[in-house]
Amino acid sequence: MGTSRSVAEQTHRTLKNPGARTDEQIIQALLGSIPQREEVFAYLYRSSGWREWVVQHVCLEGGDEPAGADVFQETLILFDRNIREGRFREDSSLQTYFLGIAKQYWFNRRRSIRPQSLPLEYERPDHHHPEHITLQNERQHMINQILQAMGEHCKKVLELYKLSMTNEEIARELGLSSPEMAKKYTYRCREKFRAFVLGRKDIVEHLDIRSYYGK
Amino acid sequence: MENKSPFYDQIEAFLTGRLTPAEQDAMRKALPDDPELAREVELRRLEFDVSESLIAENIRQQMQRLRSEPPPEKPPEKKNLVALILIAAVLLITAIGVYRRQQRAPEPPPAPAPATSPTNPATDPVPAAAPQATHPPARDNKPAPAGQQNRYLALAAELYQNPVFETLRGPASGAADPLETALAAWQKQDYAAVVTALQPVAATDPQYWRAMTFTAHAQFKLKRFGQAARGFAAIADGKIQPWAEDADGYVLLAMLADGQSDTAAFRARLEKVLADPGHPWFDLAGKIQSRLPK
Image (cartoon, rainbow over all chains, first blue to last red; front, top):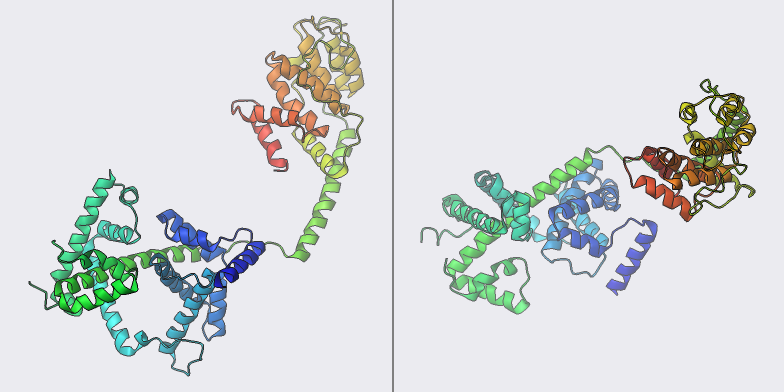
């Protein structure tokens, strides 16, 4: 049922906008190479109509245009990660899924801006309790410290590795001479990350792995 | 590092929820009993977060670049579109009117013409001995379709260049030289007289290709575009340089003006010129192509 609705939505959208991409094309691009990803982000920003919808929603719900642009950007980040990690279950169209994330994101952000009664249609995620937010902020601070220590090349390697790029693609992106070099480089960078984290008592404590530290 | 249980290979799948519910449950149960596994899970989770933070930062940077782009020009609304179409139609009609008036206006005088030796002119505008293989079909008597044809006619007139008449002169000069007579008639814009003057030039005459070229230009001026096209095509296909290469461009213009732009012969000739970036009419062919419907 969800699939047939999704097909009908896509057909309607394609008829309205012949340049529109299908859900499958968007997903494939997000799982593809760096240029493919950048191209689909540009498409979603410029031509999908999703950004306009998000900005309009935010403006109607007490925000302004810059806030709407920010919500679109952060939604895109969450959406991209969910797609890559296989969290999209295909029980709605991608557009509906994206807009759902945006609504949830804006709702949560508004709650932290100005407490007010909650509309029924929204979920109440526990991870936005103040305690959880504090932990998140601490973790972000820790991540920033790790990033400072990693060096530009290793940061790029970690990013490409997480995007499931092959050794060939990593070699091409970094200008390395061979996929074998990319493999070695990736291993060295991941070891560097590991050594840095295990060498920092405060980080280990934060991760609650101090009982294993020093073993 | 030595892995002690199969769970070590499944950490990534566990963190991204890609294990089956049963495997996910088994992993969750194993963690409290296996501190090293728990440490590996937390380290990998942190590595994920660090990597995702980099990915997110790249997306933010791209969004920032996109936001700094100038906004795209909006397509005209329907009302404006109608107004634009009306303006374009008025401009087109005006342009055609101006073009036709210009056609009636006197031509700039050509260079002075010394006489050349007389020869036997051919009677046909395109001499019978000229190659016939790819000559365009005659269309002179067909009425031109109003809109598109007028546009192509205007385009052909815009791109047409008067030939350099010095190259049409023969080595000798004399009072009875048909080329000299033709040049004098050209000066007076008496293009019919040009054709008549050159008719006696035979295919065996050394002036033959000059006479052919001159005749084809006169036919073009007389708006006998079909005849002009056949004349220029004969010269182009004769492969006698420099006449042949020069005729490649004019045959395109004559065919265009004659309403043959949709024919295979026209396309073939256009593509032939476009395939040779060193061709003297390469730019002209590009201009024609850019103005034709895709």
